[in-house]
Length: 430
Image 1 (cartoon, one colour):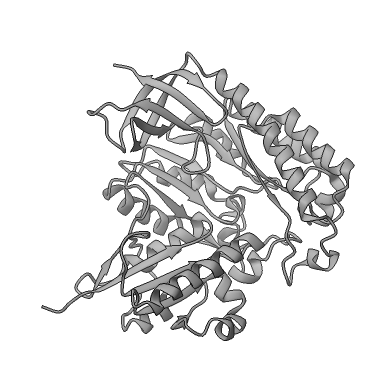
Image 2 (tube, helix red, strand yellow; image 1 turned 90 degrees about the vertical axis):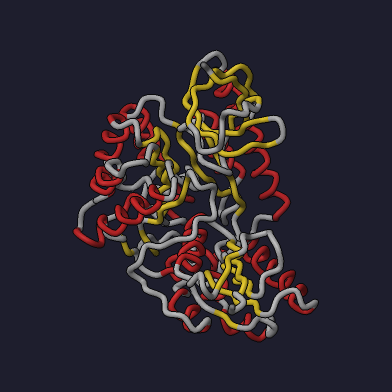
């Protein structure tokens, strides 16, 4: 009997990268390869799928590669392969700086990587090796981006926007449902633009109408929308169909008009506020998540205060903040990096402290109410789950005293009995 080669993918960065990693693993022939999940064991081959979006992500990717190289030197791995955004962007430099890596590949790595492994990759097969808990999975509906945001290097790395077809995504969703997936998390660099490259008109609602018919899928969640030209028919569909979670992740970055103009976001403060008001009007009770940037060149104390006041007034259900880092090749790079990192960190902490108080108030208002909860895992003495208003790993969780008859992947009704800033506590209803 031929001994199998053990292989592991270490996936860094965003959920879109995770889908790429799962597709790399999805077509490996089981007679030759045995997949070892990330963080477990010492496989023969390690593939590092890197992120190169911002400074911290690049540092994490480099550190991870170096740590794995050290294990290779000790004989724990035979080969280290690197793919993804970082190697796409800095391939020549990385080859010189880390010669111990056996092979480098870019973002469209699967074909060349499979050739290196002496296998053939078929681009039209929607096969994936699911690395998330089996009851939820990410569905990447498009690649690349056509936006020209001044701070973002993604279009340089990933190329122009390319929507996947509705038929192919529906087939992929059907396969995922057959594996036990109950929640689909739709991701792209820009959900709002889905379909424009195919038919010159928005097609996100049409895609959702197809996905909600997939048997076994009970929740569909929307991530990374853009405020410009977000299709209103999606909001109407969300309000009407319980399978589409009342949840929208829509990174806004900032609210000051001068900074929005410099960032090339294509919308103003007034337009942003009107859009948020429309979303909440058309989908009552929707949970809004956003991501903001602090420390962008030209962000004066007054501009930051405007952002702070905006967060206080709008009261987002979920919010994340990151500090600006200059990226080579972007339009903002020539603006320099005039704001000290310590001041950026202070601004980040101020926004997050404000959001913690807002989140506590929102959560406390849920005490005494009942919510449908999807159980993700068992953690010590608790079952840990989420409501439709929360995405895995980044949002609030519901903690329930462990009930042996309840298992991960199960939906249950939970009465909320207690709340803190980022967690709810409850008991299952009979």
